[in-house]
Image (cartoon, rainbow, N blue to C red; front, side, top):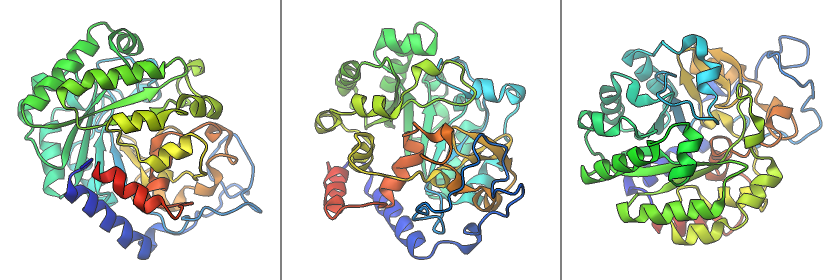
Length: 368
């Protein structure tokens, strides 16, 4: 199976329950504060009046919590905005209690521990253990440099994936992260984690200059280590990243992912086939950014992982005070080309614009 049965069944049950009985305290509309229904000082003034409302605007609930205990990192990757956007708080970090409060407050069944480099967080082992004790599933997202040093602080668990970032083979990856030797250390991290019994997957961002044949070669190379899956996402610019030339337009995305079905047939890709269909232009999906909320040193980040218009103290405030219908393709120019998995994979999982054959397609995909 692509994922542990407990994970597949647990998330399916969670989605079913929340689609039928969404928590009412998360469904209130924001109160207008500046005359146009949008309390944030953002670029556009376009109203959603007269256009189709988001099909789940009053069925909001989280699927994956993006938990950032700190933003400090031991790399300066060219496509990362965190080390620029949060420069003023780079030396700060969340306490263990703050992290666990966010996990409990949000209640998402999956927690992605990211950053920054989460293995720079002193309590990373304790945090992971406490989240697993709560019955959640974890993706520990790391560049791999500290895995071998800190691996002894973690225990293999069916709900824990060590997620190592690789943007290509050695020359390409080391260029993207701006340091030689990182690819080799990441590979040694994969070896060590697999030898110790951990589930290991990889995460790859596709940029404008990415050669998809190299990505295929990367997956083929990783076969020897019995990696448990691969995540792919098109690279879309943070507002805090200056070099916009490396990021993809919608046309670029469709070109890059045109042959994705062939890759999917040979390698264990963890993106759903419905999301890949969206990337190719085969279906329309609205953004469900609320399903992947981000919590960091400044609070609950709104509206999404990539755009920052506000930080809220509570998850309920994030859900109710963010003008969700003001964002997304056709509403906010900053969203114009975004097709990243954190905004649209949840839409596929929630069955928005689903087709009759989708359930069978997802079942076959999950069992492969």
